[in-house]
Amino acid sequence: MKAQDKAVITCAVTGVLTNPKQHPVPVTPEQMAASAREAYDAGAAIMHIHFRAQDGVGAMPTWDPDICGEITDAIRQACPGVIINQSTGVLGPDISGPAGVMKRIKPEMAACNAGSLNYLKTRKDGNWAWPPLVFDNPVDKIQKFLDVMKETGSLPEFECFDVGIVRSVNLFIENGMTARPDVNLVMGVASGMPADPRLLPLLIEYLNDDVTWQVTAIGRQEIWDLHRKTAELGGNLRTGVEDTFYLPNGDKTTGNGQLIEAMATIAREAGRDVASPDEARHILGIG
Image 1 (spheres, rainbow, N blue to C red):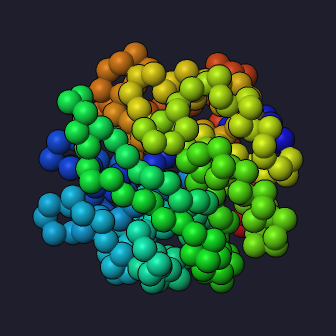
Image 2: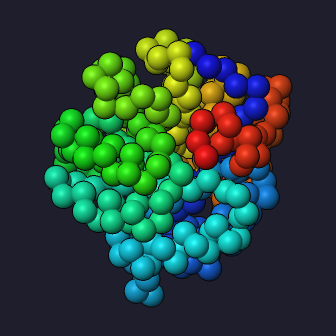
Image 3: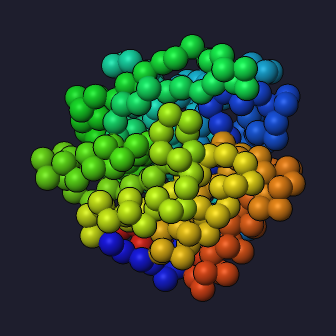
């Protein structure tokens, strides 16, 4: 398992459905570019991007190629050399929306959900936070995404929400579906792997030696211990307002810049420098 001297930091710039009137999530191309620039200046080499409707509300996602292209162009202009990592997650078999955007913006990386999950969460009273749903990612759907990623020259970033999904990545490699992906261990979703630092050393034992890996930690102040363990074990790092609104001291962040500053500090405290975009390309084997 590769432990990199330099840490590649990804900023998860905005969420999927988070209400911008309640939380500091950027929505418009101008907001996305400004927030990405703050993260870039703080050390982020990669921007993981979701796209929002430009309807004056911005609470819903969009796959409109023109909107997605405008947002991506604004971020690339604001952050010279930055690596774009496009989100692709959709429910159901129709991938035409994210596929069309990939063909339009040609991201250097693209997220690829590596397995299905019962996506669940309860409120304090025990009621469901949303109607229970299956985040469906069967193998044929994954293959369709990988085919588009090959066409656009995008490195697959396999998002793994559970241990069985982590192990499936090796099967995709053995089957020839992909060669050398990036692996993102998503920890903290209520019905997936917990954001528990004790779990991480075991999880990475299940990864092939030649893949790069990172951790997405979902939660509040408690997730920062997991980020520290990731840095210590040589993994790459990710944070942003898609993943958390809370800084290591428990204060609520004002935006992505503060979160990336905190992550860069954690990397350096673990004895690792922060990778530039060019260095990140070399580490990930892209470009």
